[in-house]
Image (cartoon, helix red, strand yellow):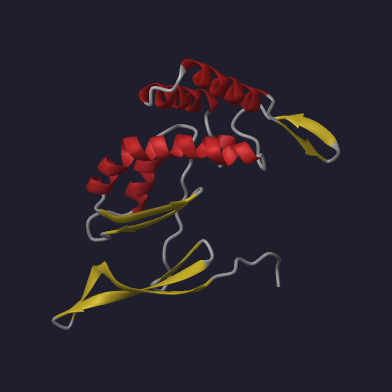
Length: 174
């Protein structure tokens, strides 16, 4: 994700945030100097050589998480309410770049949601993993969906109960 964060757009967001919060001009200048230094000196070591990263944020840099969070929160602030209403999204959870959506599948489908999410910004690319047999892995948790029963009928769009178990991603082939 970090390599896909647009530096210029994020810089503009940071400037606007500082202005909206009436940040002292000297502090604003120092913060923007910090931002420019970090994003311009964007290099990493690979196979014993130093590589310059021309776009996005550096992988592994402590500042990349903070800067990317500023960009992603602004994107959510602008787009999430509209997309939630349009696609009947019940819940939206994000941890860094992993998102879990709960939505009414009888109103929309994941491909329509994915198309709209991918239209938010050209540098962002969302992919979807859907549940299988009423389960899905999110972070280190497997979530099991148990549909709600009403008058003996299953209400497909409503998550009645979530049963969680620990999920461990495979790290090497067995």
